[in-house]
Length: 84
Image 1 (cartoon, rainbow, N blue to C red):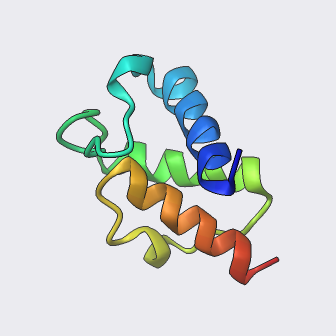
Image 2 (cartoon, rainbow, N blue to C red; image 1 turned 90 degrees about the vertical axis):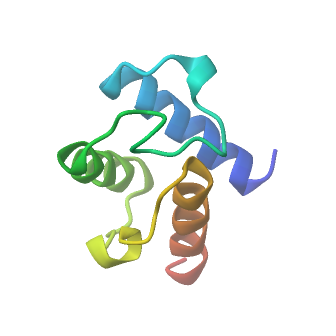
C-alpha cells in the first residue's frame, strides 16, 4: 500500500465518521463540494481532522485549490514529504 492509498483510506474513514458520507460515494474523483456536499465550514473541520491524524500543521492556503478527494490526497502527501 503506497502513501496515496494510506491517505485515501484515512480520508475515507474521516469522511464517513465525521461527515456521515457513504463509503460508496467517496472516490478519488469525487468533488468535495458538489458530490460530497461539504461546505466551507466542513472543509475547515476536515483540515482540523487531517491535522490530528497526521500530526502536521496544515496551512489553509495549502488547501485553497483543493476540489476533489484526489486533491486532498495530493496535498497531504506533499505535506508529509516536505515536512518529514
